[in-house]
Image 1 (cartoon, rainbow, N blue to C red):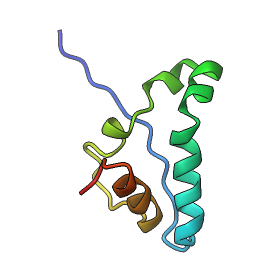
Image 2: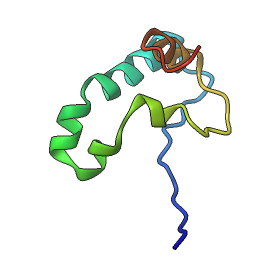
Image 3: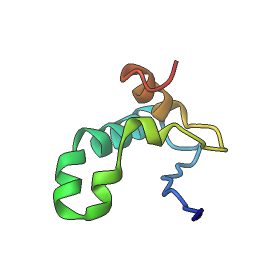
Length: 73
């Protein structure tokens, strides 16, 4: 049986400073284990999934983090 699913996306205004969005993205992924311990959905958080199939441009701060981790080229 085929089903559909919707991924959660954190959207940041382009007005936010690059460093702030970088730190937000880093905090989210660097603390994935704590998020998973606090909520079942935290177990689904992964860099590979985070950069797949997103139809809007990433904020430069998120791009910086994802490139550092090798999730984006």
